View 1 (tube, rainbow, N blue to C red):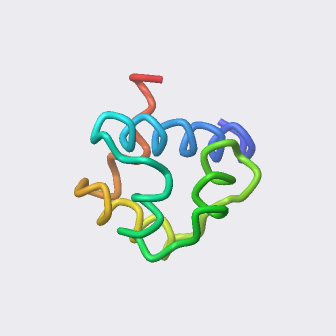
View 2 (view 1 turned 120 degrees about the vertical axis):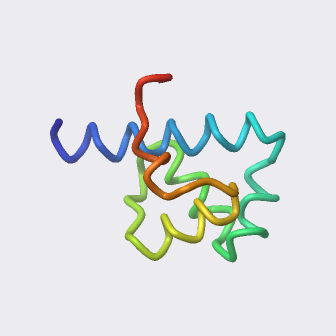
Length: 74
């Protein structure tokens, strides 16, 4: 999997997990301490999150960070 596809899949996975938990992008941003703009851009593959951001997002979604890389549902 190339880097572009990887980040696209991560964004889709974050969006899927967020929606399954009934969270808006705004609520996820608040819970993670990241900006709403940043969350939105991750979900549409404009921003490429680093390790610290992924940890914050996973914590906010109450999932193991490795579950952000589970793409079989996409």
